[in-house]
Length: 389
Ligand SMILES: *[C@@H]1O[C@H](CO)[C@@H](O)[C@H](O)[C@H]1NC(C)=O
Image 1 (cartoon, protein in one colour):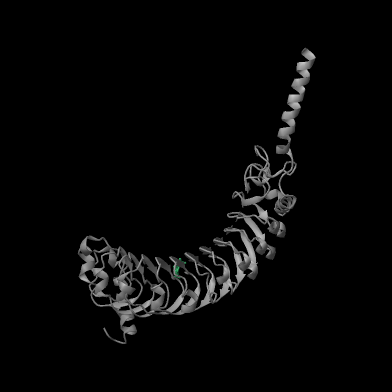
Image 2 (cartoon, helix red, strand yellow):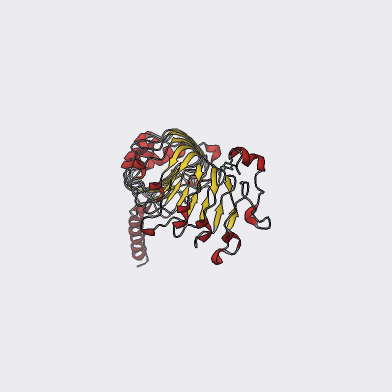
């Protein structure tokens, strides 16, 4: 009896083992495992801290097999059937090294996020075969070289963040074929040349701050961007005139074109009185002419900066009548006359902050915070206005 039950017991245990066995078998597609190995091998070992995600990538174990208690504890996500790698989201552990071209074998990858590390070298052109990739973030690394034109083959891409690297050269001209792209941030690189002729048509956010982009804002480039809400192009070398169509892009909310070399500004009232435009920053350019009264007709505009340009003439009375304006910066121009009294009497209940200082204004009440810093010396103003006023 005793032997029989122990035989049964053993058989039972054996069956259980047999059933559980597949959990311990390599199930990740071999080419995915190979890609992960190459990925880790391209990271400089001394830059992998002991308790980091990459330190737990131990290839004695299958990468996607569950449970992942001690190996592959973080940094990657696999498909529910544990056969394919779907996401690589590294921790900001200070990894350095390059991005292996074999990454292209992860053909089910939807997210690649290496942000806030010290990766360097170029983006391997093979990356473009990741046609399922929806989100690519290489933000805050030391990548260099040009953005490969083949990036336009990433047909599923919705979010692209290459900001805070050392990418150079001009932007790929055929970017518009990234039809699914909603967010694009290439800020703080060394990009040169003009904006692409066409931009991805479904963009919601476009950020290219802190590069050396030149040329002017071309209507053709922005024409189809009906969903564009945020445009951040400050700290570049953009020039020419900012035309009225720009502020009339139908979904526009926030515009930052500060610290460029724009010389002209043309505005019109919003179409049908409707606009979602909330913030416009045109400070630190070379804009000449009058401060445009039309901005006061934008119904929800609450922040306007035209500071440090070359504006002349009077401050439009309309600015003091706007119900939405909260912060107004007109300092550092050559504005003349008396500032509208409405600025100093509560502005219909609104509290306006900002500055009208460093202009050629007469009787800006010194006790108002709006009137600091002090106005320009009369001699400077006289020179600019050729003796008048
Ligand atoms: C813009 O330029 C001004 C003057 O050179 C500088 O003081 C300011 O910090 C710059 N702003 C940014 C955001 O770079």
